[in-house]
Image 1 (cartoon, rainbow, N blue to C red):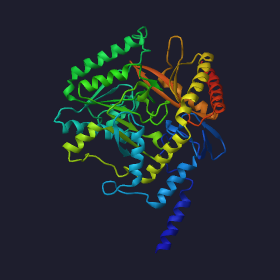
Image 2 (image 1 turned 90 degrees about the horizontal axis):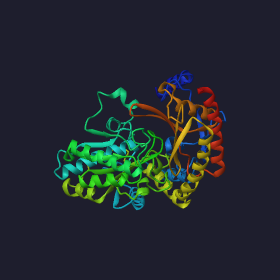
Image 3 (image 1 turned 45 degrees about the vertical axis):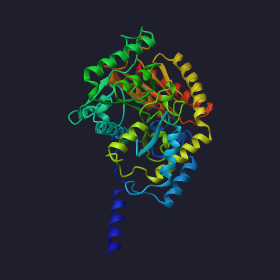
Image 4 (image 1 turned 180 degrees about the vertical axis):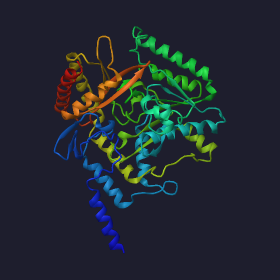
Length: 463
């Protein structure tokens, strides 16, 4: 009977070889099949090489093919591949938590593990709510975020983020209790003549007015990307803004949650992006760079006052959990990744290579009329794509300029992270440039040369 079953399965497999059973991200795309990665390069089954100018989804910080991480994962899997953290823990869970806490600012000393960034942000939102309930602040449930932001693709994180294209299918299902604020994007015509400090003061005053209008006794937390990633292509908060937000959150008993899913673990030249402004949030969420995407891993780093409330008011229990929280093989990837990051001194390298990349991209901005507004920190830089750079006239949304440019780049052997945003109902296209930390000057030159070649083709097509 068993042999007969095997023959049936074998026959069905043979019959299905010509069929495609993958639920693709886009069924209209014909994706290259990648078979290996090394350093900053990916290689497909046809032998074509691609320079990974976006580290995947801004995740593969240490580059592809690092054997130390692979070995650590293999070794851990051979010992124990999984334990349920409601019943058991591993020494690796304690070791990695200690490493991460030692790298975090201030008194963010306790680490909770998830499988990714959306889960990390969901966890932070629930923790903030439970914290306030424990302190008898029953009405604190609302979440403040920027209207242009991205915090994940679950229903709750999607409702809090500002990506309208991702949200439009789910309007009826998305949760309430979200206060969306305009981001401090001073390039808008109403504010571009203000000095930065004047503009920051204006923004902070507007935020305080909104807090008072909503009633601070109803607001749980402020979830913010210190440097906005996919929605405004590496846009840093202006100087003074995060400090002002920190002050308002403290004043009105609102937890400040820094979403460092994309920026954490050195991407911007600091271990965490909040360090650029010397601001300590109540919670930092992380993913991507903690394991350089060698395994699905994320989490949150929590300050002592929040943890103490859980211990004192909730009998030590956080009303939350995941099957794969603290997965040993993922933790092994995280520990090996951070050790590699520190041993090779890659974060200082990010600052150095980031300066060189900015220089090369700045030179490119001078050559083309369709790109401008270069910004970002470290190896997380972005620029906008214009129909007319002088007037900042955007391309029509239907033209999908960023996607088109990136597709041309892929055809030329380099890949970036394209995006399309909306500010005051005005569309704009942008490209995020975020190569692995191990990129060399020669590889930066090659990457920028391929981008230049692609831009020439793009300009001819879109004139």
